[in-house]
Length: 187
Image (cartoon, rainbow, N blue to C red):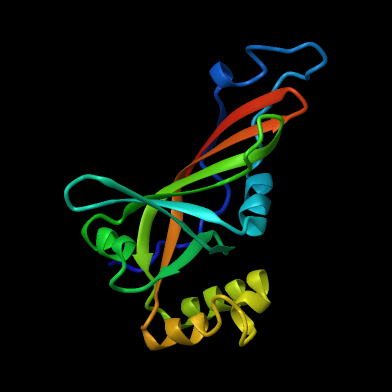
């Protein structure tokens, strides 16, 4: 797979879809909706602990599974065993989506990141991703009792496949006290 593209910066376009936002359907006491700033979405990506990865099997069926991921320098990094279903799917079709958010109709920001997963082979980028994982998940990764202990060493040794997704398109579905927004970012 190709090396990940350079990190994204400011989206090329930010659009509010009024069909699904309060701007079109104002509720009593709710402000008109405005597009969510990309910086807000990046903050949510950095804080989110669980993401749902969607890939496509060779026969066209979808495969969706939870993963831990770290947002760093414009990439969303996740890992898997080289023989796991998601790794096999990405070897055949690198297009994927990662989603995260909350299970609430009243509050939160749900995010969908669409892009192409690239296996991280560059040692410097791999070390930066490992550092982001360790900073974000702490004892789950660094403690000998942690759920993912040793994952960084596995990534370095090639026993754990590390992927980077650079967003091509992202969507944000915000809910805040009766105010709903649907933002699309393209890069």
